[in-house]
Image 1 (cartoon, one colour):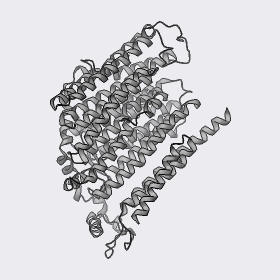
Image 2 (image 1 turned 120 degrees about the horizontal axis):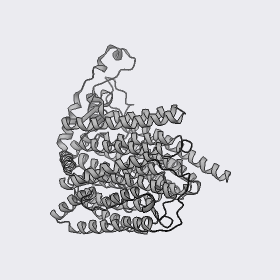
Image 3 (image 1 turned 30 degrees about the horizontal axis):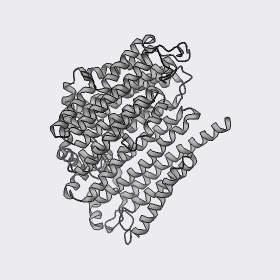
Image 4 (image 1 turned 180 degrees about the horizontal axis):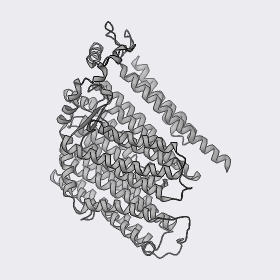
Length: 102
Length: 530
């Protein structure tokens, strides 16, 4: 499980860095998208194996649940990722508009 | 009042930014911005005074107990940084609102500056790693927008390296935070400090430390990842450039201090020597790059990098005195570089260009600006008795004391090269009598207010240079408290068993979702996992 995740994270990171190094604003948007996925997967792998554990809802009989914190981190990271993506799409739009106006 | 003080300098700029967006009339917007930035200074001065009596201010957000809730933690270092932020921002905002005629200013500039300030301040007051990440993102998204807001169409490609490196840096930061969590089981600085004493020799701590050095080094402009800085900062409008140059790189330095001083054990000599080794090319290449550039703000940006190198030496030596020197140096550098960027903006506005080849005769046209620029340039290069000298002197005497003479030599060489590059601006830009300068460019007006604002920053930096004793004393005390990890963790962990009355009111108990304020149950879950 961990080996597959590690390979996948590496692959996503590699693709993202390749796209970002292309010096094109459009590819930067896609590179950033892949990068956030890579990082989110990486953080998810930090919470140990979820097998045999329940959702993190605290009731008297339920004591073995998954660690909720990495999920909270990912959720925040996703929201921040939305913000950055929205900014970058606006930037690309502005560049395209500038090119049309010329 | 004291108990909610840590959150005020963060929330206040955010509310201001939102309020500015509500009004369309330029005068109202400017009035709000101006008033708010002054109140912000008052808040941060109050914080500084509260620190004198309370040492550490802690605010548990939402009333959750210590290692689990979000604890905003302000110690002496944070308070100094927040105060510097508010001083620079009040100057930058007033410069920005007096800079242009009312039509020219982009309506989003002021709100974005306030969001950026909120992010910078949050990164100084936060007590855990994840909120540090969130603060960095607030600051960075605002800075991306500010960078591309008013940039010329042809120059927009200069924004690319800045975007790319910061996006990758943020991703690595998040990875480092994830690794830290998996190793220590916590993200709170104080909690990690406690856990790390139990596994001090674990090699994974070194991995985390190196990763953080890379991440924050990227933001601060360490060699080899500095080239984005001198290519993007000079493209910004003058006040925004001053804000970025003075504070954004310092956030990286502050974060490194926090990670190495408060969070991780103090014996990571391998990592410190990496920082020392990287400091050498950062200083030399920054100074050499400044000699090669042709416009005022590009020269200043390269000088910024060489001075980041000097700060890296101070972090790398990692003794109590070298950190005290660093804190003094940060205080000096924030004020001086901000005023130099504003002065450069004024000179560019007066002459119509910042290019040394086109400039000329500035000495006669605006003697006051030239004189202020000369003083601040000498201060930046470290000429006694100006403020730049004292930080370097403390650092050099400490380095000689522990036998790191190589770095003393390089710091001196860097200072000489730095002085040469700055004097080149004066000699070729100000003293020459080239007639190509357009003196009657009517659309470039500089008002007396702009000069007065810049002058007050210059006077402030002169003050800490001419009577450095109290500032040095504060820096030493701050460094001492930073080295006393135990005191910090003890103060935070006092909040381990708080019970806010809020959770015991009948209203909460009646709610359909059962909220458990007991952190002990969460601990039990973690035990079962392990």
